[in-house]
Structures are given as C-alpha cells and as structure tokens.
Image 1: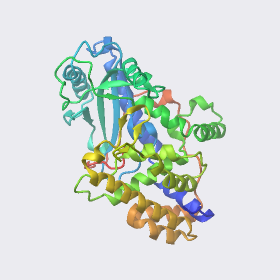
Image 2 (image 1 turned 120 degrees about the vertical axis):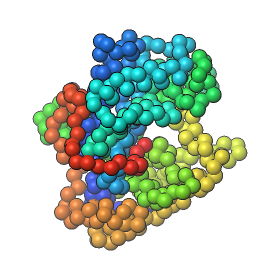
Image 3 (image 1 turned 90 degrees about the vertical axis):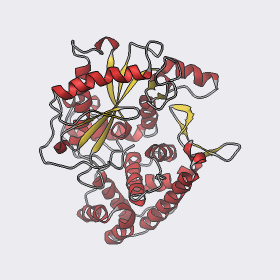
Image 4 (image 1 turned 135 degrees about the vertical axis):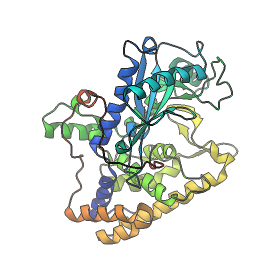
Length: 405
C-alpha cells in the first residue's frame, strides 16, 4: 500500500479522534464494575467468602471503544465476576450463574434500577436508566489457569498467558447442569496483556509524556487517558466494518476480536495513525494461517488452541465477507493516503465511515487539531473507582450497540 502524505496523516489522526469516546465514559464504566465489586464483597454478601473480583474485558479494557453510530445507542460494558476461592469440582455452571444472579438482583434493587436483570447465554445484564446510555454484561467465572496451562503445555502450545485463564458459564453447553471439569474457557486478562505487549513502547511513551504535562507520576495515569496508533487504527477499522455491514441480514459481519487480533499482529510500532493503519491493512492477511484442509486459523494469543475463525468453515460466507471488507478498506485508505484536500478525503470516506463523521474529521483537520495525547484532567485510578456510578438525566432510547469487541 502507498505511504500517507502529511495531509492524509493529519486527516486520519483527526478521524480517529472523532471516534474517541470521552474520558467520562471510561470513568463511568470503571465506576460501574467497581461499584458492583464492592457490593459483592460487602459483609452481607452470599459471595464474599468466595473472593469475588469484578474486572472489565472487551473494548473498554482494550481501549478500542468507538462512539455508537446512533446517539441513542447503548454503550456495552463487558465485565467478569471471578470467584477466586471455589473450583469446578464444587458446583455446576448453572449453580455458579444462579449464585451471581441472586447478588446482582439484590444490587439492582439497592441501586433502584428499574429495568429487570436480563439473562444472556453466558452473562447477566444490568440495564441502567435510559439517561445513562449504558448496560453492563457480567460473566460469572472461576479460576482456570493451572488447568489451561497443563493442556497447552501437553499439546506444545505457548502457555505464557495461561495463568489468568478462567472457566465461564454457557447455558447452551452440554454439561451446563452437571459437575464436570469440562467448562468453556476464556482469558480476557491474558488477551489484554498480549494486546498491550504489541504496543508497549508507544503506550508507555505517551503515558510518560502525559504525566510530564500534568506534573504527575506515570503510575497515576490510567491507560484510557492515552490512545496509541494501534488502538486508533482498530477503532477506524471497526467503524468501517460497522458501516459496510449496517444491513447485515445473513450475520456475516467480521467480528471485532478477529479485526483486533490481526491488527495487533500486523502493527509494527508506528507512531502515527496513518502509517499504522496502512501497515495493518497490508499485513493482516499474513496472520491468517491455513491447516491441511485450507481452513483458516486465527489463534487466540492467550489460548492458542482456540481458533477465532472456527465458524468460517461452517459458514463460508463469513470468510468471504471478511475478505470483501478487507479489500474495500485497503482500497479506501490507499486512495485517501494520496489525497491532499480534507474535503476530498471526507468525500472518499463518507460511504464507509459515515458522512457526519467524515465531515467532523474534516473540520478538525482544517482546525489543525490532531494531538497525540487525549485531552484530559488528572484522575488517578483510585479516584475513578471511588464512588457509585452517576449518570446524566437526558432521556435516551437504547438500541443495539455497534462497534464493541
């Protein structure tokens, strides 16, 4: 792919910044899961003896959340509730999920949340008031690190991230109602650590720069206060995907975890968004492996036995859709890379990024605003987590969220 010129670099930086959500949204998310965690650890909690730990996963954890396509859409916060002091031999998936339901229901009532608790396949969902524009999906989990480490090492896979693996619930799993060692597994902490390792140099440089500008220590700067070119590139690609598949009637939209994983593999430490984006688009395909039957394999870096593309063999239209999207993104951004005028770049990207977003980026581009650091006031992680979440009161009608991992 061609290199970006100075103008297209500025425009793509502006485009990424227009996709950024506010620090307030990240703070609301952190306050939400910390508030639930405090509730689960209160003296009266039926779970406190099991050491409940609530932490974020998904795009809020990765720093790749994008503004919804529609102002009325919810932000989806994905969280885990891991019970540290109980194991798979002591209860069923169904029992674990019910234990969490009881406490989340009591939390909902204590917080005067009017909307009922909703059960998903793997999680419970707390729906905040309409003005919050927020809901939180909480997956019940148990520690599973030693078991996963043994499995990976026995099969000669990389087990460096296995220590934080968890066993999760799935009400469609064949052994959901039976005590068994065979639980669905996940490792959001391991994936996050792998993801951060792919951008560690740039992330740490930007946190140090922000700390200097605020006369604060680096340790006091939460990760969400800065954004790297890798994160911004993923955000741009997710919005491009959302627009291309806005009318996805056959459920073949490329999933965010595949886009995120391939982008992180292809990222080579570039220090601006345009160079990172073009390099990622050129390199993503090289990280899709093939088995002896030419089936695609995109390994989960935190659990290499999991194939993120395992559904492509059963649903070949999904693989075709991924390559159709990738070719379109490559063409769109190769074209923009050579342009000089903000209006031309906005026109070129409007069909697959949205006219309003492309035009806002043009306005930002003309104003010369494209900083590497997110504008933010100082806020330590302790301050962020210090209180029960509070939200605005403007009524909103939630709809299906888009753009989240």
